[in-house]
Length: 301
Image 1 (cartoon, rainbow, N blue to C red):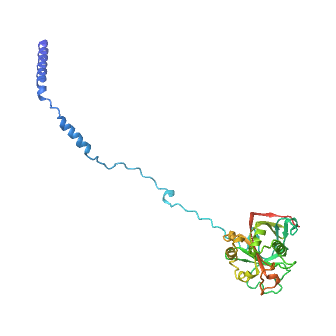
Image 2 (image 1 turned 45 degrees about the vertical axis):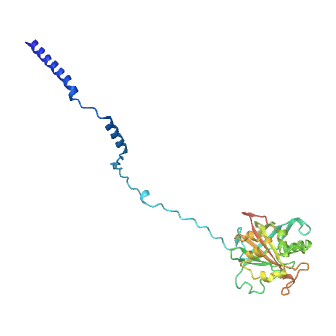
Image 3 (image 1 turned 60 degrees about the vertical axis):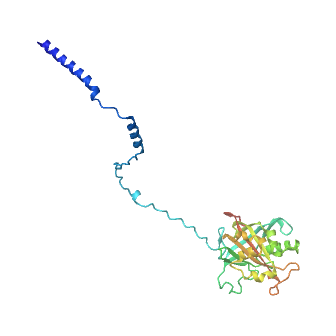
């Protein structure tokens, strides 16, 4: 009985399998048309790719004072204003005792190559400074300083006699000029070629020196003095324009400059100024600038 059932089941399975094999070719789907497949691929490539909105949400960043507070800008350090009358650490005012030592070529006019002025006291200018008739007399070795339009220090000093402040320098300049007198060279240019570049020790109270050198120098002849004396605060630019060979253009833009202003004689046969005396015919202007920024001690004499 069991065997007959098994055989009956197996026979049914074989019949169903045979029927399936016969029906599959009739019922299976037809393959797609190759032409339609190619057209679909071309159309798909031409379609724009949609851009979908991002669903990413970043984690919140906690605020911190360094992020929220604006960056602070440091205050610029102000440039200190130069102190009036102070050049190379020396205050050319308040009666300061000053001596100038010029280092020049060794000659019969300058034995040892050194020209020393007398020690003189420098007082800053104020409107009533010349009210005292005994002040600023030749032989008193007093000088008057002032500040020009650019902050440079000008110094008026006496010359013209053996007991005056600038006489040693005046005499040396004039003796060299006379010995080398050339009528074809304008006298205003000669001082620059003689003194230019000379080293100068500015000695204070016979104890300290500032080391400077001559940047520009000029002798203004007698006939030019009446115009020169009208230029005080603008003296340096005036000299640079009027006497270009004297090198004052090199200090027009400088503030750390000391310039000496003193009188001189008429030389040779040059025309004189009838309104001036023998000792005040010409003028010398000598501009000094720093050689080093140090302030060195010097042994007292």
